[in-house]
Image (cartoon, rainbow, N blue to C red):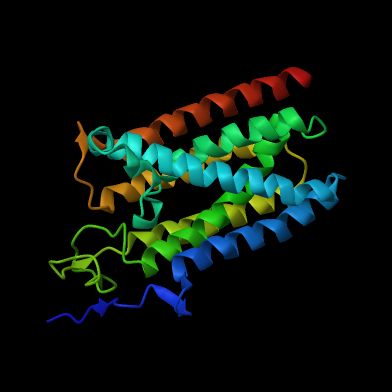
Length: 261
C-alpha cells in the first residue's frame, strides 16, 4: 500500500496566551514585507515618490482583504448571509476569495489614484499586477499549512492526507502547492519581462488575467469543488471571464502599438 504524506501541523506558529500568531497570518505578513522591498525597486526604477509606497501597500492590503471577504460571503455563501448577516464580519472563521481580492484591489487603486494624482490608475494597477503573483504564492502556502482548499482524491505518489480538515482522511492533490508554484513561476516570468525592456502600460494587467487566471482555471479541475455551472465550477467561470478580459486588453494594446509603427 502506498504511503502518503500525512499533513497534520499546528496552524498556530506562536502562542503567547492572550495573543496567538497563525502561520497563515505570517504568510500574509511576509507577503506585505516582500511587496515593500519589490515596490522599492520599482519606485526607484521609475522615479516615483518612495514616501507613497507604504500608503499604496496599505490601500492594496485593505482592498484585498475587504474585497476577498465580501465576495466570498456574497458569491459562495449568499443564502447563509441572508439568514445571518453578521456572517460578513466572522472573518476569524475563514473565507477569503481571491477573485474578490482582485476586485477589491482594483477599487482601492482607483481611490489611491484619485487622491494621489501623480500615480495614475493604470500605472498603479499595472505595477500591482506585476507583484501580486508572488504575494499570492505565499498566501497559498498558508492555505496548505491550514489544510484548506485541498484537491480531489488521487493515488499519485505526492498525494497528501489532510486529517485536520478532511474527515475521510483520503490522499488528495495538494493543489495549494500546485498553485503556489505556478504563481512563483508567473512572478519570475513577469519580472523578467519588466527588467528586460519597457512594456506598454497595462501589459502586466493583461498578462495577469491571461496567465495567472488561466493557470487557476486549469488547476481548479483538480480541486474538490461542489458547485458547478455546466462543465465548469463557479470559480472556473470567473477565471475564464478574467482570461477573456485579459485577451481583449492584450489585443487592444497590440493594436495601439501597431498603429505607432
